[in-house]
Image (cartoon, rainbow, N blue to C red; front, side, top):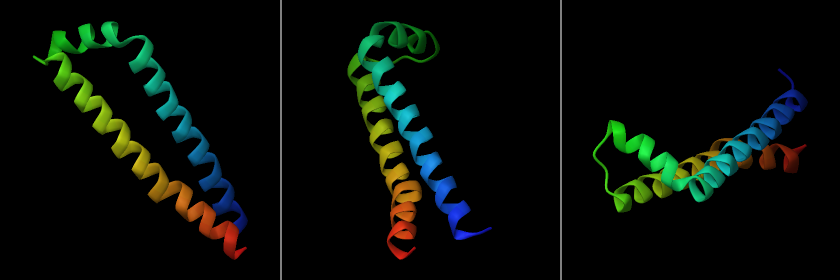
Length: 80
């Protein structure tokens, strides 16, 4: 695998993962009650706990994107 292919893969995976994160955020913001009702059928969650889990999940996912997709992509761009 060449550096150019790896760079393109990392760039596109960053775009895809940021799109997933944006969709998650939009669904959480605009469909909060529907998503909460769906999850509360399966688990006993308070609204505060539900919000906290999603906020922490989005933060963890974003940090993962930055560490495993964006940072290597930028490093390759700087070196190349």
